Image (cartoon, rainbow, N blue to C red; front, side):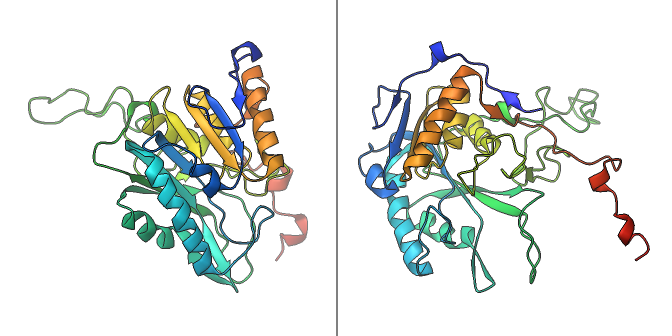
Length: 319
């Protein structure tokens, strides 16, 4: 069952259409670079986004790959300028495909961030079980999230994202703590390759469903929607309450929702007017308790084998 927001309209802050440091929410319709140039230095605790992949989606114009990277370098330089010294920048990307050849974008983006002085803390694999099926290569079922920091002194809150230990009863077998529990009562530390929902981080894959047709968060107008759950894990671990979170390619506002859900302040930028309107509506629905969301950590559905669609068709059984 999907989760519904538990707030009310009376609690909803004003949604500003321009950046205002005194307002909790800004939804800005503008080009990412132009909008970012107007934002302050050393301001955001977390900048998180999934940039256009240059694959010709409705919200982007496909250009030469090198030109695409040059454009992104310019935007990223602005993001680094705006990032607090103790802040984090998370860049979630997949692959660029050209004539059937795969270009893993995280590999191309890494030197851009490194050249701007950022340090890579984790390369997180986000796994999802469904997507388009390839015909001449294996079907892609994961994307990557690069987590960079601006300094060695960065915010990292482990406790909000701990997960249940597989063997909570395990005890020290020698030394001063012999016989005492060896784990943490709040759970274990998730690694950077997370299987969030079934094995609970044991194999370290973020197993979060992508937002497709039957996902409770799906907005039909957006073809590549960011799951709130993916952003929420970063918000909880990399920011404190009342910190500022920025998404320069805001889409339909998933990062904004993740920030607001956890009492952070947020700026969402997108050049598409319709996406900005949807973002505002989703924020309103969130505060009214109407927004459908996939609960954080909800197990991915696994068929029992009794469902008709999970059974081998009778036409195939003798083949």
